[in-house]
Image 1 (cartoon, rainbow, N blue to C red):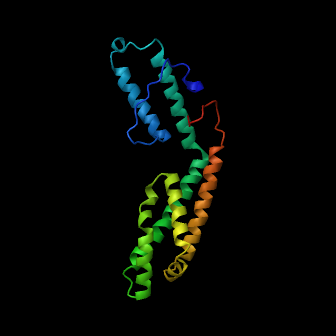
Image 2 (image 1 turned 30 degrees about the vertical axis):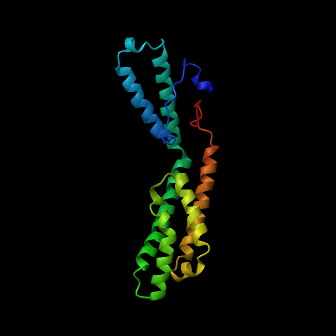
Image 3 (image 1 turned 120 degrees about the horizontal axis):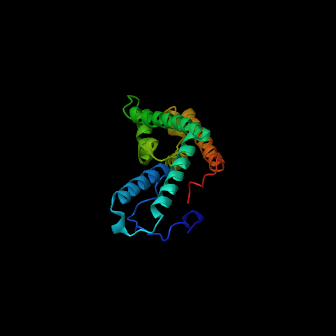
Length: 191
């Protein structure tokens, strides 16, 4: 149990059912919902120790402040801007390949059809979580690194180079954000 949990008498672990960890905003909402449900129930019937609800409420409020601090971070703004640029270039690449599959030029249509098969697993990457999208872009760039003739035929060399540059910039921003020290005396958001 970590230092922040010393005020709680016990911890109940809910058995996972193939789920992943919550992001910080989702965890904040989860805690708020659970707190509201427990608070609405007859406290005498729950037989909770004195002060448990107050301690939970205090920790919940700190988590809300941490979430707000992370959302207001300058890095968050820069990350979102960089991600939008990545999304735009990725959408351009996927759309270009899709549209060139019906090209009247046979070599272009064939190249687009080959690339479409390679790119299929990456469709929809723009809406994934940051880390998943970053990993998918790395995979996409790696897969297409061996398809230089098709990439050139479809005129996507510059777009792929730009996507690689944006992904590297995004990775660097994420690393810088991890070591950012927020103002105030707030706990780490990752437990």
